[in-house]
Image 1: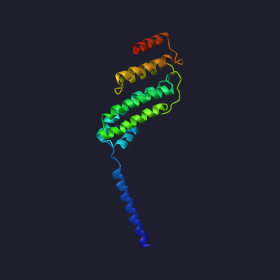
Image 2: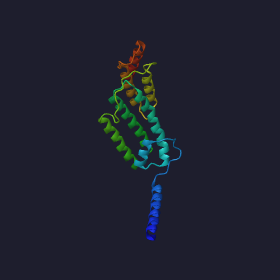
Image 3: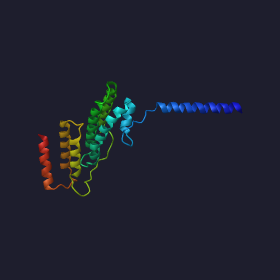
Length: 199
């Protein structure tokens, strides 16, 4: 009986040692990040071995990406393909910004990630979303168009040309959306904005 008891003690000691080694190998939590889960940041940290300093610089850039992606998801005048195409532009712009915070060896990983987003776009725009063709409930039928247009214009990762192109696409989609009950004045306003952006 004693040899069995001794072997259990040895096994328990080995398991405890393995547990400690596994804990030491796990990356330390980066102090200063806002609470909650940061799935994309965690994926990038694992892929590029980001330092805490890099994570603190990149997290706000990913958060800013959401300032466009959330109103984009609510915008009902886009088809799923149009929404996916703009979403890919948002992701690529964010990754261009993030790339500036990386070391040369990490930039290679980000370049591959950008190519992956581009390749996903060719297959239909990444994450599949159904066509949303319902008019906003009550209120201003252009509220979602205005929210998305403002978010695009405020997004620092976009170039001026990207902002103009995407806002033009948003306004054209809203103007051509028969499910929106636009007044004559709203139609004229959109027409004038589209004409101005088309120059």
